[in-house]
Every structure is written in structure tokens, then in C-alpha cells.
Length: 262
Ligand code: SAM
Image 1 (spheres, rainbow, N blue to C red):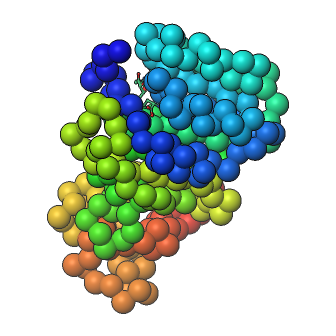
Image 2 (cartoon, rainbow, N blue to C red; image 1 turned 180 degrees about the vertical axis):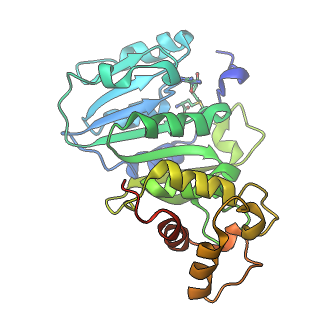
């Protein structure tokens, strides 16, 4: 079996890592797990032990010989590109309590997959993904760290994000060029009550030029209102977006758009 680089095929061969990922999936028999990119089935075999309904999306039908014997009344493999799949339709006849999404993701489309899942509004309780280490850092960064950016705040609006552990290149075959890490997203029940389009625009504009001050990036905004919020936190005009927590961004949002409903 020759791995297809263009499909991000780096298969997990380290059983300790496979077990560790599976241990972090809290699903039980009454839940549904969606696995993205089962490949040769290394993680799928472990996930099956949870006896939950399991739906796997694999773009490469050359994997059929490896995955056929994993299919049964609880496990279904769908040979389709996850990004063009109609997941809602595929799972509509399954009754379940909580939905979990798991995958050693194809790295060339990590962010599109995460955004695609979020926009589907499937009420996913937790997502556990293997991603490139650098991406894991950006997704889970805290303020005052150079990895902290608009994608961090975007994801954080929907999920509490945490980097669980790093994974050595040697855990894969073929060995990838980059380091990897496993991250977990846990659905937030305390999502800020805001108009998310306006909030995400504010965030994107704030980080437009990372090295510039917030004031410079937000020239088009009513800066007097923003300044008043910053003063409350004893911050001045030299502040950059990467130094501001979600709380402060929400405060800025409220000062600009407080009277607009969700
Ligand atoms: N889960 C396996 C493992 O851990 O060994 C394979 C992981 S490999 C990093 C990524 C898998 O995603 C490959 O099997 C690849 O064929 C599949 N894949 C790539 N692009 C995909 C897409 N758009 N939709 C679904 N699967 C995709």
C-alpha cells in the first residue's frame, strides 16, 4: 500500500498513541462518533471498542480492502470527501445522545475541516484531532503568545480548546516532515451573546496586521469607544491584538455594538 502524499496519508503505527487518542474520546454506547479519514483503520479499530455508532468518512476508496472488515451494524464507512459530504443527511436515522468527531486529520485541509464542521451546526460535544503541532499551538494559544490570533478567538467562541500531547514523527508511516499534536475541543455552554459576524469581523480586523497596534488596525472603527474600554483595563494605545483576552474583545464588541441583538 503506497501512501498518497496529496491526501495527507501518514498512518499511525504507534499503538500507545492510538490508545491515548481513544482514551480521550468520552463516547459511550448511546453516542455517535464521526471519524474523519480512517485510512488503514488503526484508530477505527480502537474507537469500535466503545460500541457507539461510528460513521467514518474516507476519500480514498483504495482503503476498502483494509476497512471492509470493520463495517458492521454499528460501523459504517462512507467513501467521500468530508468537505462535500452531507453529514446531516447521513446521520439522520441514527439516534444518539452526544456527538463526537475524531480524526488523525489530513493536514492539508485541517482548518477547512474544522470550519466546515462548525458551520454545519451539528451540536458536536467534543472534537479530538491529530493536527500539525504548529497548528495545535495556534488553535489553543493564550494571549501574549505569538501563536494567538484570530483563528484562536474564532474557535474559542464555540469551543474550549486544549492541546493534549505532542506526537513524535516516528509514530507515523511514512514519517511526516512536521511534528504533530493531539488537541481537544469541548463545546462551550457559555458562548458570548453577540452577533457573531460582527464579532468575527472585529477580531479579523484587529489582527489584520499582526505587528501593528490595535489602534492602527481598527482605523475604520469608532476608536473613542474602544479607548474607553482599554482605559478600564489600564491599557493604552500601544496595545496589540495578541495581548487582549476574549473578555476584553467582548467588552470592545459591546461598546461598539451593545444594542445589536444576537
Ligand atoms: N486514521 C488513519 C491513521 O491514523 O492511521 C489515517 C490518517 S491520515 C493522516 C488522513 C486520512 O484522511 C487518509 O486516510 C486520507 O486518505 C484521508 N483523507 C484525506 N482527505 C480527505 C477528505 N477530504 N475527506 C475524507 N478523508 C480524507
